[in-house]
Image (cartoon, one colour):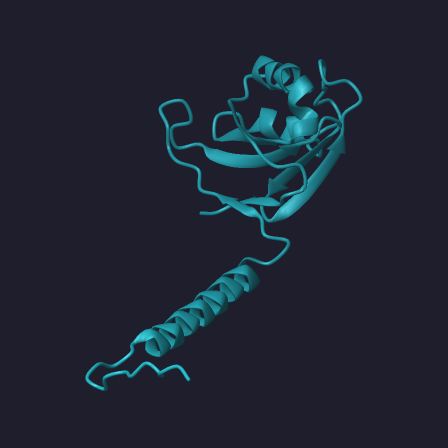
Length: 153
């Protein structure tokens, strides 16, 4: 018969304590990530904070989303939608209800801040040139195709 190994009782094994601490840490990390994911939500959007620049000065930004066919302007907490058939020559002659007409009449106090979707990249330079031809200052940033955006003040 073989002899059993004998263990001395003068030490304490910390492995079970370390296992408990690691499990506790993992649970806390899971709870933290879950709360962060829930607070962001699946429909999380972007909030832009416009900063004063030498070009814009103290002008008021008007956020305009461009996806290649449709302009969506965020004016005074309302959304004004406009479908453009001719990007190279948009006309503000429809009166003050068009986005270009709104900005053309207020070009000294407002500027256009475009959120350009990937589907609108190809035609954006022509659209921006049209706005500049009307004397409207233009700023732009790319944004993910389906992500909502808003201006924060």
